[in-house]
Length: 451
Image (cartoon, rainbow, N blue to C red; front, side, top):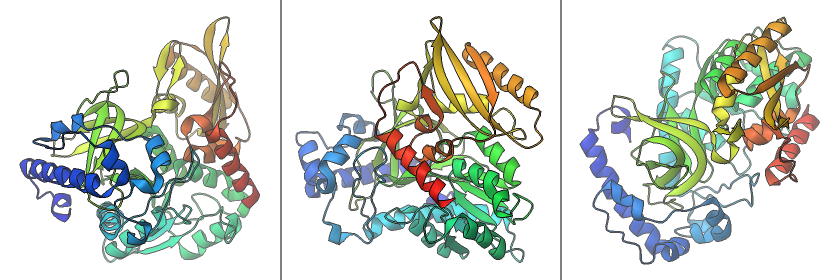
């Protein structure tokens, strides 16, 4: 992993490593995981090249929910740490990590963090203080970042304002008192914090020392990254892609791109129509295979995330997360990704805090109704015209744009569950609320109580 991070691994050596690791992990799960023993029974595990992965069966989120501890290659007692999924999209599933799993998860984060730190904090100058703004009950982010920060040699603290032991008032006090200069947080919550800070006597960015934002936990388009950077007057990075069950298969580089951690993961792209593999590059649903023979390797795990994977010309593959496949929304007869809609609305980072929208039909034609939260001093008429024009050009449908003084908290916290659940009300299909909608509502209420 360290040699690969330093650019010392040739493409041929990497392919050989991945092929051997794939054979090893397939044998490992077939031997030790009750679920995979059943799932892979009769499958040809004689891998000659990476393309042979296509003949191995998929693993789905429903498989994880039904199999639970049968997914594991051992018992919970074999774990170094226990984590589990949040349960916001269905039954929580166990995500214990053995030492090898945990180590090879935090180490790429440490490599990414080290490069960002060196970029913005020259030796002999200001020392980094990293606040991780995430829940830390049975979630891995806080602990993984603790190990990564220790490896890099910087100060790190957990600072989740929704926690009953902290709250928003003390959260802002700590940012000021400690001179915190790096934040690790979801994009939506970062924008909410910037908006609500003045209610606690703190102005963003004037009263804070924040220089670097590391985003995670939900989709972060380039336009959202620019919005964050402008609002906080800080460098913004889409720091890592991952989940409780999958770990961290991709992390940022100083140029802002997100690179796949190829020594420990194979990331395939599946065609959205045929559900067949397109190989390791392209546009479609992300399918993930772990190459680490640990406690819960996932084999051809369909993440449900919509991605684009491209080579970067330097021997790496970069990952763009465009939302979830199920978050795609049909507008004017064409399915649009969350990233397409987000990019079209976030037209100017100096004018807008956030948005939510309704999709409805009028005279048999799709229309959008967008509610924007404008920044102080923004020209409302100019902003409405700008967003309406961009959406009309992008999607070819009628658009209504309004300015609202406040957005529902669900718009800023619901993104932890799904962009669509947080942002969209599809009035064309007023179906009953599902578990994701209920989870987003619960999150919003928890934040409201903490405020």
